[in-house]
Length: 370
Image 1 (spheres, helix red, strand yellow):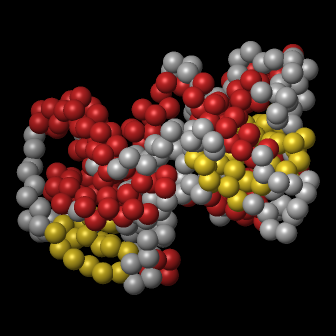
Image 2: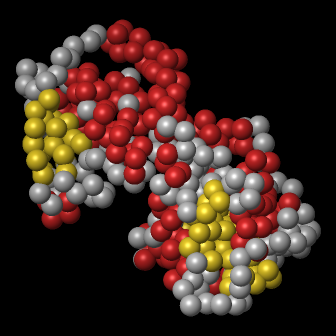
Image 3: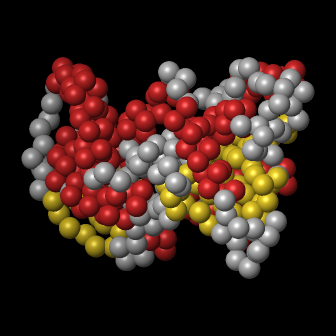
């Protein structure tokens, strides 16, 4: 329960859950001071919140260490914000990868923690799910300050107001192919910018539209709330319209080849990509589904489909992927499926990831399919 409470405050300092789950678990086991750490976490919320609102790209790396029940928590802040490694805390001993993150500074933050009995932990869990989780979503919405985060990412806008990031190839005057990349359930993020820049360097017009109408986050509960209408209610129309606006904007650009428009997406975006391609087959030459929700009923005019899935993906197990492939075959849709036995969900994470391994193979396979 205390670990859950710590996660609920993650949005306030701009962390992604995958970066600190192990750290918090070790904190909980080794020092039994999670309540103290939680209070220290709250005290530091302003540090990360303002950075994420104004830049949309900065995440301070904070680590809690409470070696005994009577000592203050130690918060170590990396001077380099883009490090994606954390200190390893084992029984109160801290090892920090300075070769990765560079110099660090150390400061103390007072804690006013309480050692709570089991029944209090249970009560905290109920309060967390019933109150703090919805409150955390509202806090994230407030911190976003309208469309501040999108403003720091998008550089183009369609006539109907849909914003997007577009990267244009240098020195190419005609016959330009277009790749539209639909974001993950977090919304339009800097990782989409990087992938579009990668496409531009290869001669494509890379476009990443904002399918959430200005919303973007790194806070998982809010991301879930944003995707629920489509995932649960099957309400994909607003997202399909956003992609359609991006495609029309691309087609209006000089030098673009209207016969070479490709749409791909990741996670939530993969589901959008295949549904858009089925809705507007006349505009799309091929679509890419990177671990996105399959269609259960494909149409015979669906453009060719390139699909990437990890065998360890809990959202889309092998049986669901096989059913998707069988449905495409039944409808006579050309497809290429790449299954990766050692991968789970969202392994084609960013521009850096596509430099090697399975992510590189999946990305290069998509470009070859186009």
